Image (tube, rainbow, N blue to C red):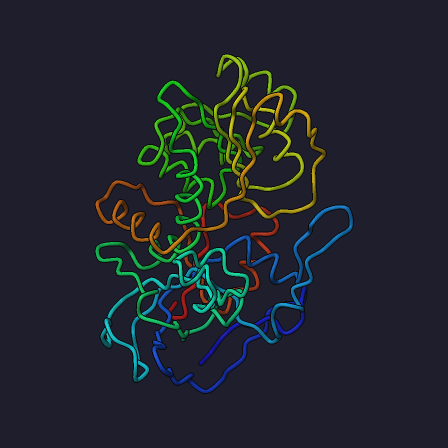
Length: 352
């Protein structure tokens, strides 16, 4: 098994080779065909999440090095554990990565995203920056018939995260406005999914003119340059006639979170997705006075993955732009993503 691994947090990834893992129990071994590169990978690579006010979530307490990143994985079934049923050698599958421990009360109730001891592919156990990967059970393997392999892998996080966030605002009406903040990989996926999930008019806010242009071409009703928040809010108030009914922050930085919150009308609902980090000041009194809601959204459930793939396979979702790079260019893909040079998604391929 050839892989690109974190040997030291914040240091360049290194190529390592190991014996091919042997699947046990219900496990399934897949030959990796493609693996997306995600912003979450950057935080794991750095070794922490910024919680604001000098506090950090130290990932060394949650994972062991060396470690293989990659949670947007597509592969071909290569071997089955003795208890694995429901897939066959040669099947092409997306690996659903957001897996719980399978033993606690929330997992047994089907709410694996709420598990406090997750076993996520690419964040808790070795992922797809490799030419082989283990999936713990066939139920986490999703068919993607008719979809290009390199595009299919992006639905495991970029697509699913966008879909799940939008579903939390599916109550919005046709005359409402929804602000999508950030038109990178996940935000752009949300623009593509929006018309299938919400009825509201979509406004995309991004500081990058190229990303705004792509968002307009992808179906956004309006775009706003939010590099000057005050001017952007003035324009947004004009477009919405008093504020947006909903906002989704796909960046998760203090400036974008504040912009999203301030963009809401009375009774507005903001969903926070991005993990850039830090914190923002918040007037507690304004929550009840303006009856606003702030809700966190983290990736999506297995049920939502199946719902989303039904839309994708029916041809209802336009593909996001992506570029394919060799697996051994994983490190440069991360550095380019960190520098904001990526439009859409980078996908790693061990076969390129």
